[in-house]
Each structure stands twice: as structure tokens, then as C-alpha cells.
Length: 162
Image (tube, rainbow, N blue to C red):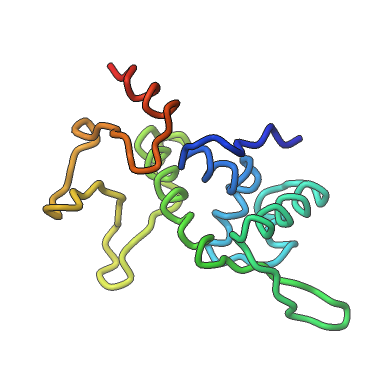
């Protein structure tokens, strides 16, 4: 069962969550980033039911995160590929992976998957970069500020920062 939509909420986080969907959709996006593309591959990887998988793929397509492409005509079979918008969800997937690895949510044996630079083969991690100077910024040094699209509710929320 899908929860209530965040339509009308002026929040980039809520909008991204709404587009990505629930935990099953996030796992499908994970698999797409890992190179899986076919219905049966997603079903096998996640263990999700056929009905739920069909629903989540349809929703990801409606949100323009994936595109369905015919790869076989007799019988008709489709694969799913990330759109440009869908490829941007890699940042969210990497952030979830990085937090999970830090807190060993998969167990004490170490990360089950690591991302590495294609050029150097060295592990990569997400970092915050000051847009003006290009220098790294610690998460403890980051504060939310009203943006050009802020409405009264966003300003109210920000006024309550501690």
C-alpha cells in the first residue's frame, strides 16, 4: 500500500521521496544502478512479489525515473533503463550505502558492496563541497537556509532551528 503523496509540499526531500517511492522502488533503483534491467532479475534480487514489482516499475516509469524498452518481440519482453533523472538517484543510493556501511547495518564483516573510481579503482565516498571555494565541508558545519523557492511554511520550519 502506497502512502499519501507529498504533492503541494514545498520540499525537495519530500519531492524526491515521492518520485522514488517506497523501499521496494529504492531497491529496484539500486539494482538498476548495479546494471540489472529485466523484470525477473529485479524479482530475483529483491524477492518482491510480481504484483508489487509491476506496480513499482510502473510508478518509476510515471515519475520519469525509468524507461521501458522492448528487447524481444516474440513474446514481447521489456527491459528497464534509468533515464537521466533516474541516473541522478545514484547520489541517494550512494548516500544510503555510505550511512549503512558506517553503522555496519549489514553486519560486522564490512561493506557488502563498495563503489570505486573507474580510473583509479580506489573507493569513493560522497562529500559536501563548498560551491564557492571548492573545499570540503563537514556535515557538522552545514546549516539549512531559505532558498529562492521558500514559502512561509519553509521559513517557519527554518525559524525553529536549534
